[in-house]
Image (cartoon, rainbow, N blue to C red; front, side):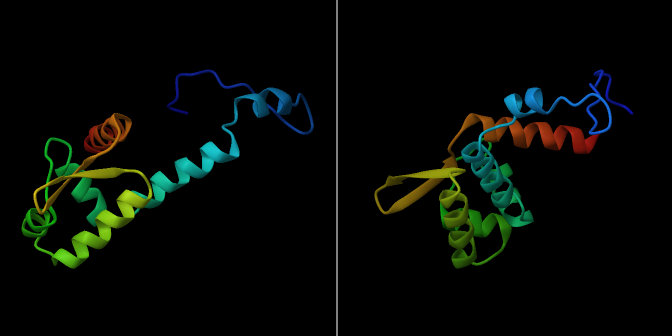
Length: 118
């Protein structure tokens, strides 16, 4: 086991720690929100879009040019990311500029990329 943290054994045929484990489990509502994040991240195109948004606000047309896919496909992916609370946008005249909504998403993306590269 590469994890340096000492884990506590819990077993149905020995010492059970179910009450303690239940205390630290996230609520059902929190788990649903977490699952939405992973659903949103479960697509390479959406991930690429999010990595592009780490340092930029990008409109649909620019993202379309960057990824070399149709604007309708980009818009569809942005709708999914917005639905799950990952991105938001601000209007500037007729243009909508998308950005990552929460810093923890940026941290998660950076952490995953760093660990995948290692």
